[in-house]
Length: 60
View 1 (cartoon, rainbow, N blue to C red):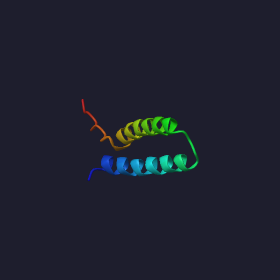
View 2 (cartoon, rainbow, N blue to C red; view 1 turned 90 degrees about the horizontal axis):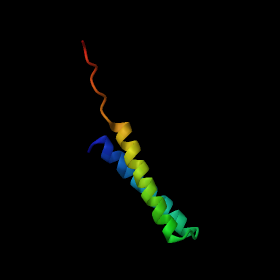
View 3 (cartoon, rainbow, N blue to C red; view 1 turned 60 degrees about the vertical axis):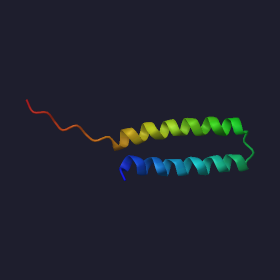
């Protein structure tokens, strides 16, 4: 399993936990869905930037 998929799995678990906590606190479902969508976007962006392989240095 790649480090990107491991990162995303962990992030999804975090999002699920936050969504359940928000539901138990009585946050409206619409805002929970909006928060989940935003957090998934942030997770993909950070996962891509953190697990991107570095380009080898070019010699001239």
